[in-house]
Length: 140
Ligand code: CMP
Image 1: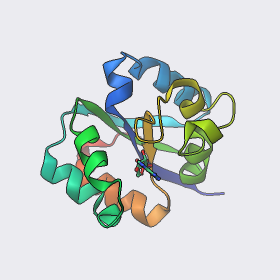
Image 2: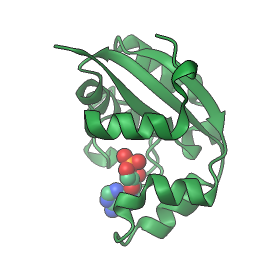
Image 3: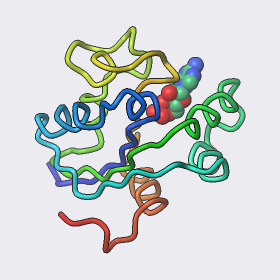
Image 4: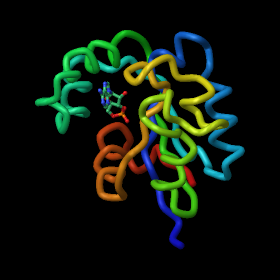
């Protein structure tokens, strides 16, 4: 298995409840390393571009409104099989379907306010990472 990088967002519902450290503890306990991290407040244009793949979905407007409703923490995570591993660590998109011990089961409020985003492929991870981070900001 190869060492990979994936892109993560700790979403506004989690930053609002002061859960950044608790989410990071779950990430680190899984063996993934946080090799870049910054707290930002996304602009509407950033959120629309980031979630552009979902533009035709009925939940798109609400999703963008939610993602700009407060600060987020954008991260680069590194480890063996990081993309798939982080998706396991997050749990299912809908917290009602998430496994015990996952970030979304532990912390998410709803399918929208679901505390964390993670890339769904290595290709999307590279795109998403480059959207928020310069190479010099990632220290493995
Ligand atoms: P995320 O991994 O950030 O990618 C797209 C997001 O859309 C997803 O997490 C959910 O938080 C959000 N979302 C809101 N409503 C839905 C829905 N009905 N189905 C899937 N995703 C949804």
